[in-house]
Image 1: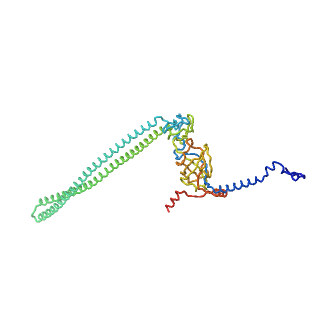
Image 2: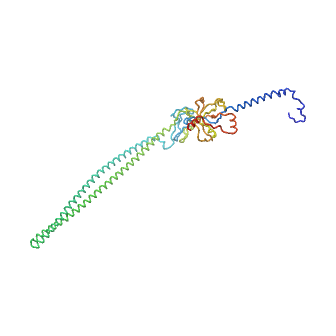
Image 3: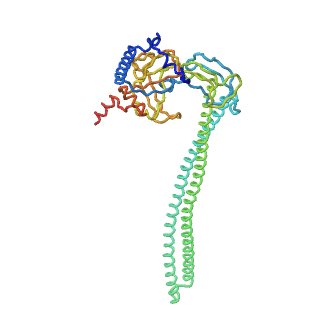
Amino acid sequence: MLNISNNQLNKKVTLSNYHSYKQAFKPRHYRIFNRFLKVFAIVGIIILFLPWTQNVTGNGYITTLTPEQRPQTIQSPIPGRIESWFVQEGNFVKKGDTILHISEIKNEYQDPRLVERTNQQRDAKSRSVVSYQGKVKALDNQISALNTERSLKLSQARNKLQQARFKIQSDSIDYEASKTNINIAQRQYDRTLTLQTEGIKSVADVEEKRLKLQETQAKLISQENKLLASRNNYINAQLEINRVAAAYADKIAKSRSDQFTAESNQFEAEAQVTKLENQSTNYQLRNDLYYITAPQNGYINKAIKGGIGETFKEGEALVGIMPSDYDLAVETFVDPIDLPLMHLGESVRIQFDGWPAIFFSGWPNASFGTYGGKVVAIETFISENGKFRILIAPDEKENPWPENVRVGSGAYTIALLEDVPIWYELWRQLNGFPPNYYTPDGEEITKTKSK
């Protein structure tokens, strides 16, 4: 009642006579309430000294342990057009099963006999290679024949040179003999002329000796001419040797040039044959790519490209597939301030979305519906969301994870750290301090041994 009047009833009316007043203002109630406050204070103080498990929480989702087991899309390495589908969404396919058939859209590959015609070109070029090989062999034989003929011609020219040398020697001897004869004839003529002057010889004898002298002079000139002709023949024989060597060198060089040209054409033809073989193999492999097959056993999730006649580019996703055999893992994210507290092999509690659980943050042993895990990978570079990625695998010592958990479902992770009193944890939370930094026992042992 509000005392807004000057007539104050509380001073005129006594409340002690009423039953409600007696029930509410008994002295016993004060004693019970005081006892309750004392017991509550004692219990609160005891609770402050109870152990509390520090933890680092994170939100993530379910994934697979290895990349090859994760959901993937199937692409076509070549552009094409969808012709027919062989599966439906949700179907199970084995590795190598045909998913869809595509056709070619590029003009240079639309010939149905492209591989056959490419093989014909390759065979024609192969025969051209054989022809060039025969030409190279024929030119090689021609070069061998020219070398043999050159050797014979040079031998013949050297023999002529030797004959010319011997002829020069013979003519030189005859020439010297002619000079000796003319000296003898000159002395005989002079002596006969002297005797004819003295009257011992007749004029006829003088004329006879003069005639013989003239004949001897004529023979000397003839022998000199023969000697000069022999020397000229010797020079011609030397020139013939050089001419034969130069002529056959030119013929052999021309044959070798033709041989090198044939070899070059042969190598070019072989390169074209190899190129055509490569093209033929590529065309055959491209024909095999017209049927898109499953890379592994799994379930068809979604047809990204649907319908018939729809075109697509190379590398464009066509259909999604989920592998049937996989090992579950949880991908979670932690703040950078908590990253030093994460260690490989650390225990983690996981609460899956859709699975009932009762979880007490500081008392994981009293929780229900959570599953155990071990940290198997810690990312060394920050993710796009500003946190570091942690990969968690099932803990073999704990209960197995639910069978109906699907990849992509949400998960709430709690990494268990040190045990501290509750009062310390409250003090840490009020001051905004991070959990206690610690080193697992295994790492401590390793550091001790290394020291």
